[in-house]
Image (tube, rainbow, N blue to C red; front, side, top):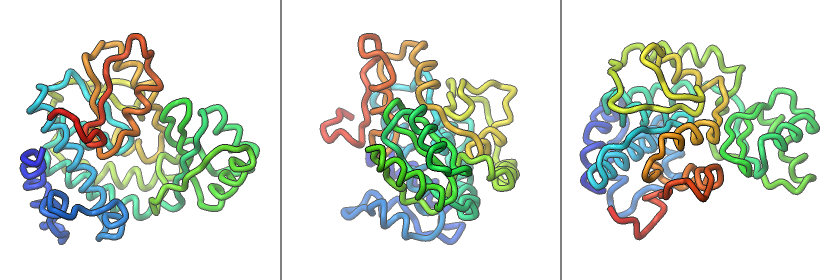
Length: 285
């Protein structure tokens, strides 16, 4: 795993240093790696680069141990790492896309709140709270939904949810996303992505925002920018992936949120084993 981190962040850090940021590889793989809070407090772009590079490094380490996957799933801006893993973007271009995203997100007002309920319950809470500008942003599974909107609306939703015994958590992110009001930011992001070199994928790439597998005719710069304005439906795309009958599912991220969703969404009798390597101390690399 540490070999993969060094290899990936050698390329990521070339982009970071060229943009005036400190190298991340030695910090992340050193004896005192940063917490999420420390990354969030670092210069703009640091957190996005860390998440992007970490996901690509996990993917590379899994390939070294288990071979290339039959496909990948991108959820929200995890699509940048998914497209890089599939060879559509180079590691440096993916890093530039992550940095470009960080600059765009800095101009996205509002916030994001996690609700511990189903999508239908979340929509009822939005309606009864009077939060007219808040929207369902991400459906993780039948117990987890993210809503996006102005902070004042999120406060209303959170209060209404508490009155209904629904647990809420305000995500510690100083921006909103997956919101239809962010069309100008989406256009700006798409323009910044035009400088990337786009190649054919080595294996299928599924998008929770597009709700399907990407096709050769897709404008992937626009599709990535759609993550700013369109919702992500994780269960829908996971069920599509399950139809391919994969032998195992791995989450290439720092936690296990997507793995947990897969376990809840997919039929326990027919679903493959699901692993979140970085959340499993005894995971066999």
